[in-house]
Length: 80
Image (cartoon, rainbow, N blue to C red; front, side, top):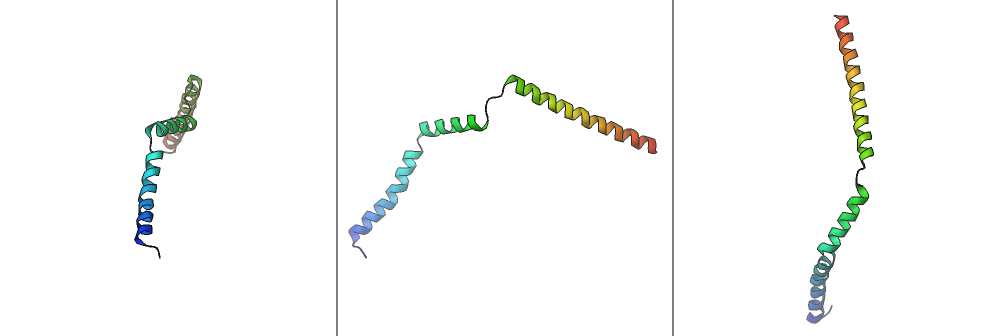
């Protein structure tokens, strides 16, 4: 076991280390730069053609679904 001086030094280190890391890594400039870079990496800006292609695919899907529902409704009407 150490003396009280060693215990005070250890306690100082235990308290200073997390606070120092928090201060270093919680700088707004670093955080903002990292978040902006990661956001652009994960969600790249959409192009006009990509947006139009997506809308066309959604429209086609809805038309197919509507056509299937109409066939099912007509079939149910014929069975009555």
